[in-house]
Every structure is written in structure tokens, then in C-alpha cells.
Length: 261
Image (cartoon, rainbow, N blue to C red; front, side):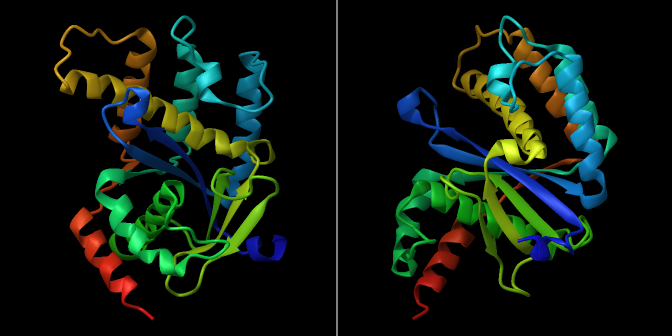
């Protein structure tokens, strides 16, 4: 794995958050997040993160936003410092929405390609598949100069790497990425960044969903307000990239792929 990473110029650190109607959410969707970082900045940001953890006396060995930020203890200063870290280093933040009710059943037509790696019958794999594919199109066709090539991706292990670190190479020249690696979050400190970004997005989205559903009596908590403010700052800096894929185009692409023998 080391040899395949030695030419990497940019890393994208990834995480996801899930919304389920069965869990009280108003949608069945999975959002994937990716935060890019130039290779030469990795050690700098790693040190900055450790300094923040020390300064705020975090008791956790691995950063999980859901345990760090609470309604009673919103830790606004820490959230602001993490947001400023993204802003200061101009880290591009990507967001992709996988819509289960529109894509899941239609995509299962691709299950003829299933193998020990591919599993189009699993919603988690489909979401990962669409995120990587859509981000690739976004960088390859729409924003060709946004990131320095070559690109490597790191994921917290959920779909793969459940027991061990696993790495997969991409075919060239179809993909902008060289490799994606699934590993334990404790192995890669910068996986805290998409975890944090996904958290502020999720808190903001849940509140917005409830308001859009007609609950006008809600008043945003201090924690939610700060999540909104952080997300707004990242967006206003031009660092928020929502990858808006046309579902009909995706469905037509699925049908086309399914015809491949």
C-alpha cells in the first residue's frame, strides 16, 4: 500500500450519515462527505487537531462529534476552531445524497456483477458506489482543476475493512482516484474532519427538515445554531460542494451498464 500512496498529491477523507424513516427521520437517504487535503498539509493538520484536543481537554482517544458536542455542552469555541481549521487551510468539502427510494430497487439490476467486493443488493454499498462514481464525474468533467492529482481516498471502515484495513485500486484512466482505503478511524486522525463536517450538516438538516414539514414552533438550540453558522461559513468561503446528480441520468446509466455482458 505504501508504494501506491507515494505519488499521492491530494487525500480525500470520507464519512457518511444515514437518515431512516423507521428511526423517526422524514427521509430514507444516506449522505456521504469528503474533505480534501493536500499531502503536504496532512502533518500540519494532524498536529493542529491534537493541539485542539489537548486545549479543550477532550477525554476521547478518537474524535466522534456525536460524543464531543451535546445540547447541554455545545462546545461552541471548539466547533468554531474546527471550522476555522477548514477555512484557514481551504479544505474543500464535498457532499453527496443517495436517495434510497429512487435508486435502491432500480440499482439491484446490477447484482449480476456481485462478487466478494461488489454487492448491489446492499444499500450501504450502493450509496458508496454512487458517491465515488458521482464525485469522480464531478472532478473529472466539471471541476478538473479543483484538486491536485494524484488522489487517494480514506474511509472509516463500515462497508469494508470491518476487521482489517482494506485498500482497493481504481482503473485508470476512468477514475481520478488512485486508491480508496478503509481503516479504523484511530489510524487516520484526519478522518475527524468529515466526521465533524457530517455532524454539523446533519444537525442543520434535521432542524430544516422539521421546519419544512410544517413545525413552525421549533426554535434552534445553541448547538444547532452554531452548526448552521459553521456550515454557512464553509459555504460562503466557496468550500462547500454539493454533488447534485440527476436521478434519471443515473437510472439510465444503470440500465446501460446492466446490458454489459
